[in-house]
Image (cartoon, rainbow, N blue to C red; front, side):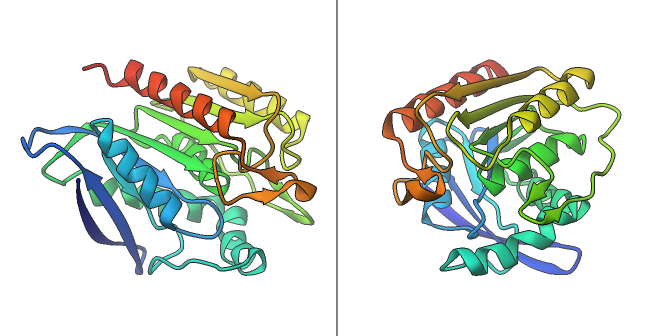
Length: 245
């Protein structure tokens, strides 16, 4: 396993990404961007980069906040997330910068880029797809699917005329942060846009079902091992279809 720290920028903000790959043949291969959850780039996101590397991809854990900033509690995480949640163009710019950061890497096939995201990161990769960015596909794990966060409401911005990639949404039936009408709205949105989309809904899963450190069932957030495994397998199948060997 080889890892690299990648420094890049977005509109004057310094960002720090984490890149992982295996196989020293130097052959170009698909790259998959990982968008972190609301606390910022962490060990979980970097671990996913390494897991994707083991599958034969270049894994790249992006930095949406700048300087690899990471919150230690939910209150600070909300302060970091809200500006990007509310300003969808800013969010698109930050996640798009990750494409620019990796597409020139000598091991990356710049025509074969995908993205995955967790919680807030799921929203980020959905916005990346909406932007018309040159990605083959995006996978949202227990992503934020709507425009409301408590008393806050994000401003919608237009989608690109031509959305290039496919979408896989992996959602927990018991996730209290996504309303049924938001599920219906996003399905309708991407159907009308002509996007090849899928949504898996897991009956026993709450929000954050992939994160072993998540254990707040009273808040609707809890790790669920079986669902985490099944969702990861669904992602693998999705990328196998998009990036055939």
